Length: 112
Image (cartoon, rainbow, N blue to C red):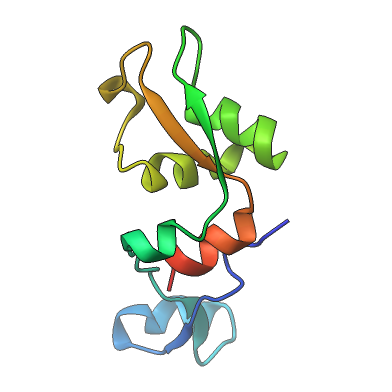
């Protein structure tokens, strides 16, 4: 399964703000993942991503759909982002959402 850290950049944090913490831990610096940036794929890229349609029904949640399609509920945010929904409450019963089939492919185009 795709890792959310696979393509993430790292940076070295050795700022004075963390100096006491670093000294207590016997370290000079700590390597941290940078905050990811998300890009909504343009239509030509979306056209190449294989998806299935899903009709939103009673009991649906992004995390449940992610578990069903990806085997991991933590990827519910991918389905939400791909469909441009910030929350499930914006959906109504009968709405059609698209679920990207290949998780690694969709992560490659939305996270950088």
